Length: 335
Image 1 (cartoon, rainbow, N blue to C red):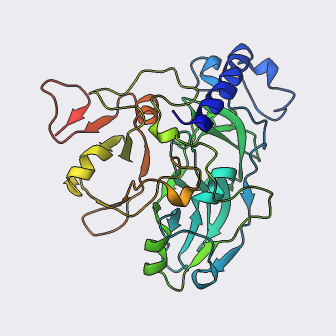
Image 2 (image 1 turned 90 degrees about the vertical axis):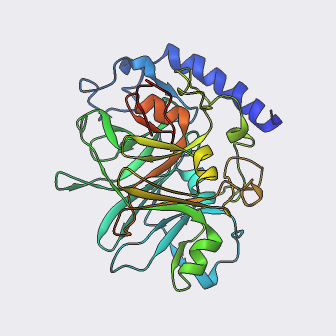
């Protein structure tokens, strides 16, 4: 276990003890006066824990600045970026080196208001349309976790949202769901080669060690931060990456053996060349975890996520595991 990760476990462990003891709305109302705690889909308040920082202690980015690909010289070729390519709009990408420290970027692409999100503890990076029932929401970071997954909040109603599922779980928007838009994580070199005239998010004007990974060795650890739920089934390690499409998950261990998989109406491809953002101290030096693309039978990009197996199991307990060869009689597994 890396030293940086060990220190993090000790610090977050203290937060866990304090967070569990205070996991009740009466302890939160002074910080969240606009949140309707009478509406929730959470079974027990103890499912929600403090991640350490307070509300907005991890500052979301609004109206991000962009530069052209040809102007960017700070990113390593293998550094991961989150790419959004919408018809009629110039392609743009959001480096994980910034999302690691901010977790949410509120932006607009081709007239569509979007939230680009990243939860380092789950490696989850979905992009959502910010419109709900005719309202355009803007999102911030609560500083709280559920199943070790980022809880976002919208500034308009102060409702809390589960980042990986895009569902409102506390407050006025309980039960509402954001629409996920097609986006994917790839290497800077891949994006740059495909989009020489594209845009890339510029470095935010905050004092952060951009390019550094504060979670050194995390994705090589035996267990996730602040998670005491069940491990994934079928002997899949909790920190194994899986490709989630809807309620199905394809383990990355399978994709490394089968770089092209055609199942359940999608084609999933894997290619080497992208660094893990959760391995070495410098993101650009992380081990190669490869790039995944998911397309439908017409070649169109499909909304998906590449997340850790423990998070998929916790948030989609009835989800389908796409194992290639399903154990005989195994529930929730498909060939």
